[in-house]
Length: 497
Image (tube, rainbow, N blue to C red; front, side):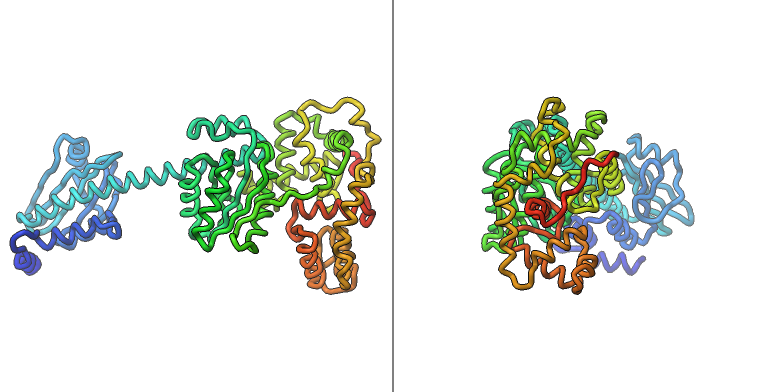
């Protein structure tokens, strides 16, 4: 120890500078060096002692545990005394109170040599540095907790919107963001980035939208940030952000009611796929002719009410839960739907299986999925009151809806785009759909390789301007087109549950 102390005395400064140990201690206040454990280890080496930093409960915060008098520690942590010293022939001990935002701590320093002025000064100043670091750490931790809680709250609001519970979503949002969801409609955007920078991108989305939008880190896709924007300015703000960063992409929905947030989210994801091929890296879901818009609206509503009538016997909240979960489960995978809803994938599957049982059908059949998807999306616009007049006529059939001239013309035009391809991808696509989207079974039926089936289906996507290999609205529209022209048999949704 004498050599160490002599060396430090030789390095004590000249006018205007501090001792070398002080400069070393200040280095621990730099952003890159703020670590309580490192400071305690530095103190141990600097004064040649065993050092412990512990709280009032005796929990060791840093250093090595020392045998301390509990009553003395209690007096120091309670503020009755600020410091204490004790010595014997074998040991010299110093205890100093270290303030902490939530609890006081004791810095205990034990060494064989007596404490000279230098050692005492080092201990005192180290205690002050530890106070600063603990306070800063507590503030940083509190900030992290606040940001995490706020992010969790935003996700909860999104999940309520996804299951059409707009009343609860508004109630939750009103506490922190008054007026955020006062609008009846909104656009949903998805910003895609590398997962490693998503947190930064989410913060920039908040800054750009000035918290006039609901910004959520997507629970299903690590690189996605979901933005629900009731204001018209949200799209411009996000496009400006994407324009400044070469590695960002943006997909947006058309304006939808808040109750159709899940539908808008699906549109934004679909548009995001297109954005990857656009020079400005942005795309808005293209409004196109959807088959349901070509059907008689009264007949469509009546058919929908009849198809979903087995669910009408359930309590209202259970019925709404099953409908919302099935709508998302048909649009996305069970795993992703579960992440978006904040439930387990087994819960999603159990709810969908219950709907299958009530409807007396099987979601493994793509034609069934397409038809139920049509009913579920039509149901969103229906009033809560059950249809009890002639529009619920049990004789109304899906064939009646699909046999209209407008629907058949749309279907023939859509599938006719594939006829120019000599490989006959239309036959492959029809067989693949009949096989439940299974390339191996379709290949066996066609007598070709499974990879050939996948290539044909993939090549049909740009021609039909729809994603087929990912389940969702695009695929179900193509299935309905096959049903309308008679290339596939109509599914039976009237089997008893």
